[in-house]
Amino acid sequence: MSRLSTGLFAAASVLAASTAVLAAPQTPAAPPVSERITNPVAEFAGIDKITGRIITFDVYIDETVQFGALQVTPRVCYSRPETEQPKTDSFVEVDEITLDRKIRRIFTGWMFAESPGLNAVEHAVYDIWLKGCKQKSDVPPPTATKADTAKPKTNAAKPKAPAQEQPAETAPDSTGAAPNTGDTNTGETNTTDTN
Image: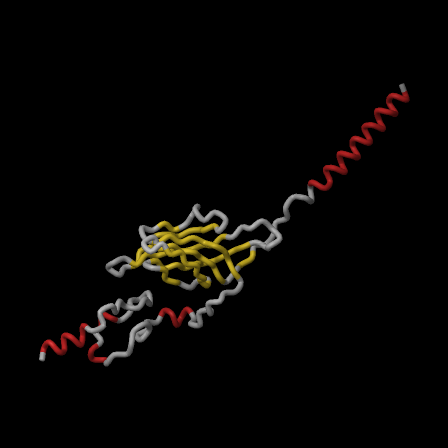
């Protein structure tokens, strides 16, 4: 019996040792929690459903870029190191400029580059989705500070005109958007018609 108990004890010891050896690598093999990378640039893609054109554009964090009738503002853009499985996400606000020039929020939330259909902005004419986050962009960074962008810009997107012909209604609204100056000859036509 002592040989049997010694053999069982030896087998149990080998089994315990092999279990400990096999179990030991599994504990450290769990994926370590890595820090996400905060990026200064979010890369989006947008489609104009009328023309069928797909455009890729970069937007700096807290900067607003207009794509068609939509204004896109990323607030944060996170990614993971290249050695890990990609997980790229961005918190984005998207506003629509309506035909009566009012701004209406149509999306606020997280977009995921690995699942573009999950939280993409689907508009009647335009769709926008996140493609990725970047550390650098070919687009120069915005130079104005937040305090400067809050001030109305009088000559932002229109040619200089004499001060007396410039009606008060053409001044930009508080969002900083340039006024619609599609009919530039209206003032001159009215002046010649009254003579």
